[in-house]
Amino acid sequence: MKRTRALATLRRSWRLLRSFRFEQTAPAVFYGGLAEDTAALVDALSRDHSLSLTGARVLDVGGGPGYFASAFAQRGASYVGLEPDVGEMAAAGIEVAQAVRGNGTSLPFADDTFDITYSSNVAEHIPNPWDMGEEMLRVTKPGGLVIVSYTVWLGPFGGHETGLWEHYVGGEFARDRYTRRHGHPPKNVFGTSLFALSAREGLDWARRESSRGSELVAAFPRYHPWWAWWVLKVPVLREFLTSNLVLVLRA
Image (cartoon, rainbow, N blue to C red):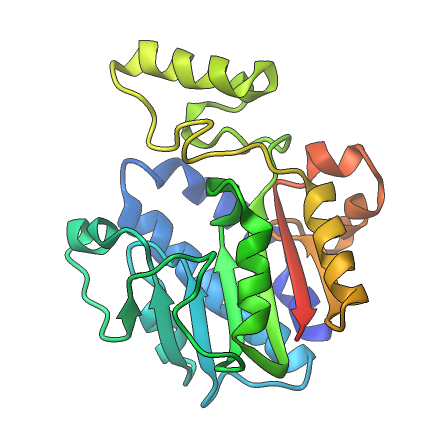
């Protein structure tokens, strides 16, 4: 994990933290930076596990507005994005040649199609995220990587745009308080498009898959500097201090 650790600096953590405030007001700023960081992270993880993005077939499950395509293309990958909501890309005025409309829990691809399959900040938005995880493993070639990154509910950003503390009272409370304050419901509606997903659930899923033939090769807090990755080893504490969990499995 030498290259991945080298990427996980305090400066990077601070840069990403500052960008979160632009998610709703300036999505191009937020998602553009997130796309570049995601491509750099996947590149580092790939090289740390004897793979390369150059020439690799990469599936992005739920890539959103399409900001990720150019970031991966610059690194030589053959990128395919799967997005259930075509309105996301249309609203941003972005066209991606290799974009497919589909459902992450029923991927429209044959077994063993991709070298690397990843999902960034999608799992917490669907009610059955581990069905998606199993599908990602199915379409990944043996020896390839599956990378799942998601926002942990009890972390500081678990409530997304509804606030930093309101979700600790409850998802419904955070949703309703946001609606009262802004005059409209949040984009991420608790119970519909936002769910309380814990770090433990992700780790349990990854370990189950490891017992079935896949291999959990890495798990760490995505936005922490490498020297703070230890928090993931401490039950309960990790739920509050891990804002985003990365799970890396070899198919």
